[in-house]
Amino acid sequence: MWEFWRRHKRKVYVTFGVFGSGYLLYKLYEGHKRRLSDLERELADEKRNDELIRSQIKEHFGKIQTIADSTTLPHVMRHLSSRIEEDLDLTHLMERLMKGKDEPNSLTAAEKLELWDRLKISNFTRIVLSLWATTMLSLYIRVQVNILGRHLYIDTARGIGSSIQLDEADLIDRDDEQQFLASADYLTNVGLPALTSCFETATSEVLKGKQLKDFFNTTVLHDTILQILATFLSMGSPHHWMGFLMPEHSKLYNSAATSSSDSTEPSPASKFEQLMLEAQAVLSSSEFENILDMSLKTVVDVMMEDIKVLCGETNLKLGIPLAKLIPRLAHMSRILLEESNRDRYIQIVQNMPEVEMFFTLLYASTPAS
Ligand SMILES: *[C@@H]1O[C@H](CO)[C@@H](O)[C@H](O)[C@H]1NC(C)=O
Ligand SMILES: *[C@@H]1O[C@H](CO)[C@@H](O)[C@H](O)[C@H]1NC(C)=O
Image (cartoon, rainbow, N blue to C red; front, side, top):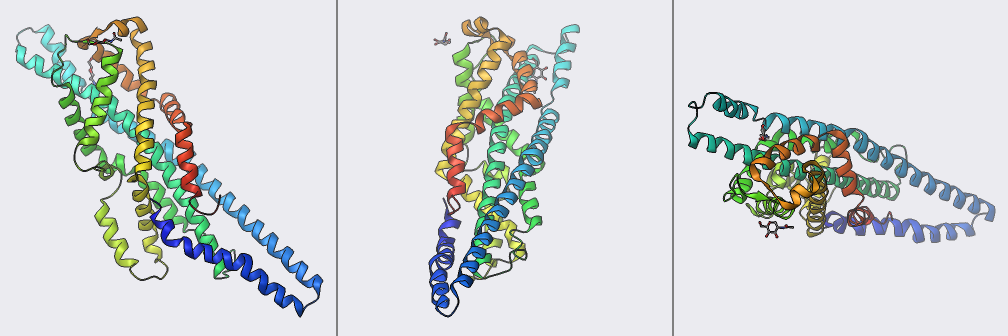
């Protein structure tokens, strides 16, 4: 999982080793030739320098986190919500059904059934897609922030090693940071249509045998939603969903591999790609799979609580016909994408102890801890 860190940790340890002990010995040796007070003053400068670096990293990391929390995440979520609203708007279907009611002969029974079937599938699709995308994007943006944090640390360490002036070592290229964070919009800009159709396939697979008159109680609804998620995840290759979230692996991989085949510093142009590759490595790790799975189960539970309130607790417990449940699901999926609810779901996920632990470890995979 920590491929990048594994590759570079020697370098960083060596850098710190030299700085920490070797450099100190050198200073002590030099100290023979100097007056003791000189040495003390220098060591004090060294310490101040160290503290300065530390506080600069902290400040800069804080800035990235703030940008991500206050700008990237809300922007990406708003954009996603409005695209889901637009793409899955089936009011025209509903209008046709209503028209069919007024003019009894305008639709055959088979046509009506077909229309209801599509409403059924698209309503479930919208709910599960919204849950998945919200959870995924909030986790992904946090992965990005932590990767940027790691880089900050490693780059600063390198800066010390090669004794670059602190203000010259422009920790990480701001453009690359921006570009990297902005890539969280890929799902909404590029991946959404294919993601939607994938969820549609999974949903129709799971709902195939469900009739409009079938009773749905809390257990059935909960299981149906989890089943759709599981079906979606089992379609295609193990991490096929990454293709909806970011540009194809091979494209990034090839260009990054050619530019970093030698051991020199990566060129500035490949920095963005390097960040993307690290993000891919994190997302395809089994640790991430675990927390994604846990997070999805949690948001499904939270939504079940909300939908119970929406349907009336006892109603859903006893079960209501699918035909009556669909309008409630439609309502649920609309309010799910509203800012206050979205934020509540995201907060619940981010505050899960397992999720917090995952990100602590991700960031601490540098000696920054
Ligand atoms: C919900 O319905 C299913 C099947 O109709 C049934 O097996 C299950 O026991 C019900 N669950 C509850 C909590 O009533
Ligand atoms: C969900 O179903 C309702 C009918 O109950 C319909 O008006 C609405 O357009 C459907 N929404 C989607 C996203 O399919």
